[in-house]
Length: 283
Length: 88
Image (cartoon, rainbow over all chains, first blue to last red):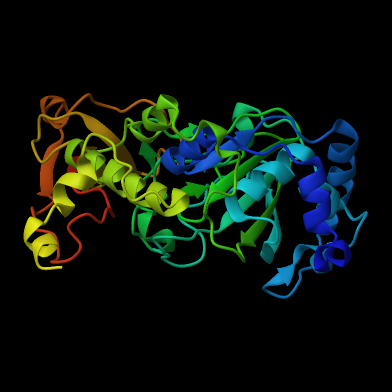
């Protein structure tokens, strides 16, 4: 029972609120999940004292229990039931910490981050990292809440090469209550917006690496729900007409990897272009 | 003072200049404004032709390039990028 010593998995399984298939499908379509005000006020107040001081880094690939001792602030954050349940569904029971960082947008700093994806171009078809973004204070429209482009996570671009793009239809400029957590696919296009307020804006980010195959890690009771297909069929206003179809094709490929179901499709997009009777007859 | 260039970049839903705007950027050579990432939720024009009618000069349109063999389903940068300028 290594998990008894390990701690994180056991606690996570005991208290978690697992995601549904529809929620997973929404993540696959949008590239993120948003959990509003899931961190209690007393922890948010604690965070606003801790984050300005910084949180010491850990080596890449450190197990959660080693990175964050029991009782530490990050450990309590990732063990909150809604957070633990969502992480369990996305990256599995024993993720490793890639790295973490405190992000601060200075008051009236005058500039925004260029639109980017983190790390380097990462086109893994059957695995993904998750980045947790935690906002300990209410983020108002003038505080430069993170810009996120829904449905951008499967685009094959490298870091700030997207910096030319300032605004895309349907982008989300984060405004949220204190204690909100975003869980994002590693490829999502995002950026810290210009803070036009007189207050510092804090965000704590943790990147998780999965250590198990990311297959059916959530509550799959609703796997056959028509709402799953509805989510995976979703379009976004910034999609070009033709490329938008490819986005759905690529989501289907990811959904097949996450479910192990190679027959799943939306509108016949993948089935049609992989139908090769000649290959079947010679198999 | 000599003329300064203002640049408008529109990203359209298809390669047709009269298709809807799905993304936009501004760069101001006069220094009178500082457009930046995520500063607007509404496009400046409904489509590319509307920008022409408002006096913007089209100076570059994205080429139409076939996908690389083996990467026909990959998605990447926005494909239908149009650069406009005004001098002021």
